[in-house]
Image (tube, rainbow, N blue to C red; front, side, top):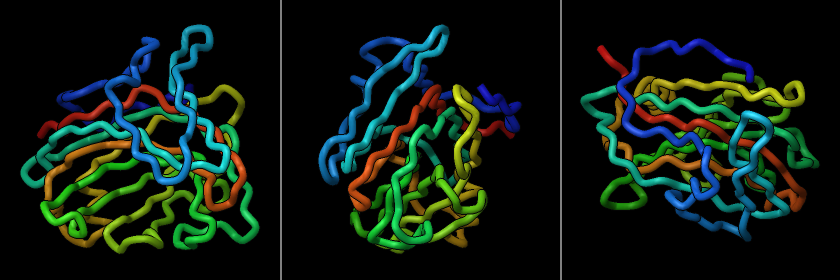
Amino acid sequence: MAERKPIYDVTPVKLFSFSSDNALKEWEDKIFKGKVVYKIEKDEDLSYVKAHSAGSASALYYKIKLDARKRRPVIRWKWRAEKFPVKSAPESLEAPGEDDFAGRVYVIFPAMFILNSHVIEYIWAEKLPVGSTGTSPYSKNIKLMVLESGPVKEGKFISEERDVAADYIKLFGKPPQHNIGAVAFMTNAEHTKTSADAMYDEIEIGYKEK
C-alpha cells in the first residue's frame, strides 16, 4: 500500500476493516441506476471491497451521527482505482452527461428539509488535476474535490485523511450548518454506459483531537 503518515491525532468512532466475508452487512444500498457489484475480496494479507460498475450506479452508505458544528470530524480510508469509465468528452466535475468516476467517497450532512442537505464528494478522477473542486451538475449543495487522478502502480492502495470541517469551509465558504448523518462510497459508469472498477479499504471515522 502507498502509506501516508497520519496528519492528525484522532479519537476513533468507527472503523470498517472489511476483513470478514459479511463486513458489508452494516452498509445499505442506494440505487441510482442498476446495481454496482460490491464484494469482499482477499489478496494475500489484504482484504477489501471490490466495486465493479457495468453501466450502473449504486452506492453503499452507512448512517452515523457525528458532530460537525462543535467538533472536527476526520475520515480516513484507502482506495485504488483499477479501471476508469471511458468518456467521449474532456473530463469534468460538472458535466451531467459524463458524471462517472472510478472512485467516490461521500460525507453527507442531512437536513430536516432534504433539499437543504449538503454533501462532500471526494473523487478519484482519471485526468483532472488533484485539488480540483466543483459543484455537482445535479445540485448546488453537492461539492466535489479531486483527491487522486490517473492510474497507480498495480497493487497499490492510496491512503487518504481528511479534516471534513476544513474541507466543508473550503467548498461551501462557511462552517457546517448541519451535523454528519452518513458516509458512503460509490463506483459508477451509468452515464458513459461503460465500466469502472475500484477497491476500498479501512474506512475510519473519528474526531480530531485538540
